[in-house]
Length: 182
Image 1: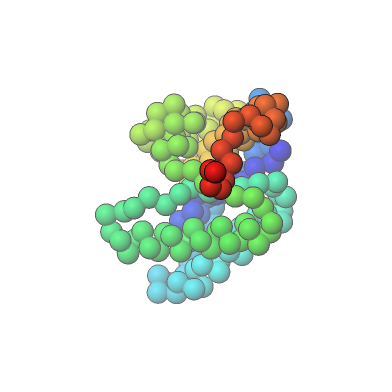
Image 2: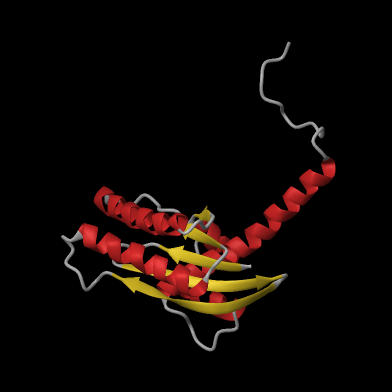
């Protein structure tokens, strides 16, 4: 399975692509999409750069699914709003290509990759380098995106096992049935 991870940002959005075969994780590509060449006041143009950039990454690497970081609430509400709009442009680009999108918090990603939810960026970079056997450290935005893809690789396995267990137990296994009782 090929997974695309996205670390959204209005100035710089990181992306990372990995292949998953059983327990093996293989690095495919990573990088950033930058809007820093545009004036801060050109929000629609910046969002279009992100949208087009994500579409280009999807077209080039043909992932089967994507994972995106969930926005946290900043001290500055304006920054949170702008980050949310960047995230929305990224998710829209993904779903317009019919990709299923999973969402994870930064804490969930750090817990899955480093083993500690409050890890700093350098720890994430180092663990991503080790897990994917990279020759050097990826940039911080690309490392976070690769970390999101790794997180989804682990979560997808667990979800598949749950679905398989649910299928083994059958339809009458005590599941709640919607409706009124008589």
